[in-house]
Amino acid sequence: MDAQRDWGFAGDYVKAMWLILQQPQAEDYIIATGETRSVRNMLDIALSRGGLDWEERVEVDPKLLRPAEVDYLCGNATKARERLGWAPQVLAEGTRVTFWPETLIVFHRDVRGQSHDLGVMEEQLA
Image (cartoon, rainbow, N blue to C red; front, top):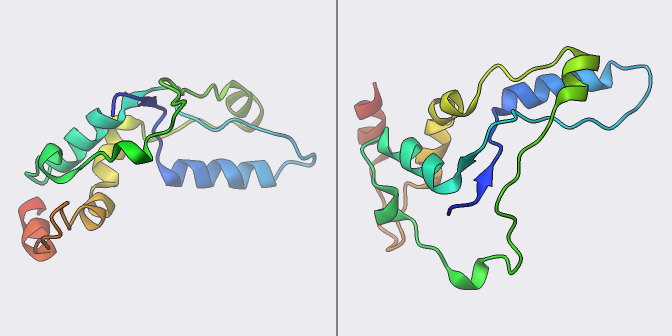
């Protein structure tokens, strides 16, 4: 939960892919925001927006943890910025807001299998 990741907005990545496909020569690019946030932090902010406490809804199964977890992953998109003119438009703070509906769908069932009324939660966000 404390692993730091480079979170980004899918729409930004799709734009980067389109720009890459427009290039006359195939090359490898790193597409990233250059910012990191912990998994715990992203869950906290995303779910608290809907009045949910992630710690009441997320259970970590030790059997599913990676034996050699990488604690810090952050990309450097300098090449994409310089050659494609690409830069992320939505950084981690905005990503938390834009992925909220998807988060709501994923976490609508807590670890005890109780369903939650998505309509009520969506009304709370309006």
